[in-house]
Image (cartoon, rainbow, N blue to C red; front, side):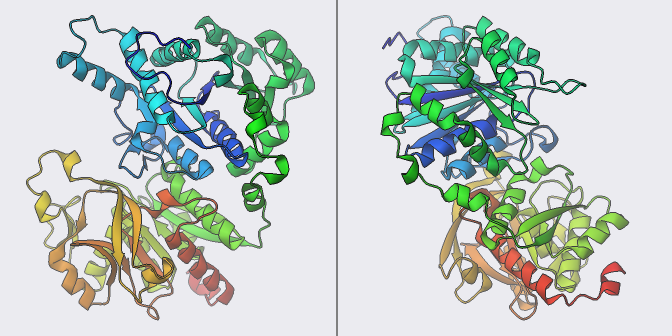
Length: 554
């Protein structure tokens, strides 16, 4: 194996599967890659993943949800692209910020090394310095695992992605043939006469080959499975065997994608190409929990209102998935009803009033906060099961302060610096921190849970839980005594930080808020406790059917 002059250990890692995309973005490279990893894990292999994002941002923390969807938070506080959330959910693993490679992170590191004189006067260039850093990060993330799935964001041909593809070309040069595999995902559209068109795939592969990369596997994204004629044509013009062309058709649920590509034989082909098929568990011994879980029959539908300011599922993707996971546990489908807190018109008010439960998710900024508070008040006063997440937790505190404690104009200093009652504020020890990033609480932190509370029941009687955070503002300690005296219970705490709130049993069927984001640790086979509790209460409410239809529609 060639070692070359690279500033990394080229022996790190074992087997690598690189996933690229062509024709257009948003095809589902991440789900294809995660599904491949899921099947390899089912076969008994230790699988990890790396997501490459070619943008110049160091991380995803400042990105607009309309462009990149939610900001997903890892256990070490890394703010990353939502695709890493899919990897964690599909593979049931906890990743770190080292599993996300961005151009900003690369250039920042190389420039800092140049400024420190680490390159000993050499001219610092894309090749070898940037490409070496790319390879180093991939190998270090893969260390200790059987297989590393590496997804290259963007589309082949994008100028910002060129250094990564060059790094992969070099990577292949350093590896034995059976240790590396290139999978290329492309669009196979229909023409108006109903024919599956292969030309976009041909051009995409041509672009990839011009860079020096030959795909080993082609995955065609299409509304339906690829016809035999289509597969043969793609194989002929793209220089791959016909049995290396796979279908990834549209499905109703992304959790069915592993089942679809398994039926296509993708996992077996990957294992044979990587020369690990003999090490895999026999088909009868492989884990079938995933298939059993995601194909389980449902017995009904629960409607959950999601009150936020982004009319975009990707902006609250982990919340949607956590609802789905709780539904899988209960054997029901969960329909999420979007409620626009900026413009609570008749349609959105009707959705709120007909829902079996309410979630107010996290976020930043004042836009839509009055609508969120109104929605929380409605849930509190009408016994609608409620779950507030991060900002939703803070809005519940503000609602209680204004409408139960009669603290007029109570607010968060994030939205109103001159509020007479800053019930949500930056903690005193944060006042002197000038760098705003220094005041952010990110990643996994432990919360102590008060025994005998609803929170303790949710977490199976545990006296603590560890969940992920992404916030700057907290409940103001000066108001805790007054809030608790008026009936609000802070059942989870971390020193002087309030982490979980609830209304006492008997006063409300389910009213819970968490300063943390429990949705980030929810998995298909391990649903988040606060979401399970919400669905428990929503199902009880639905079964009781005590609502007066005239009152609901009023």
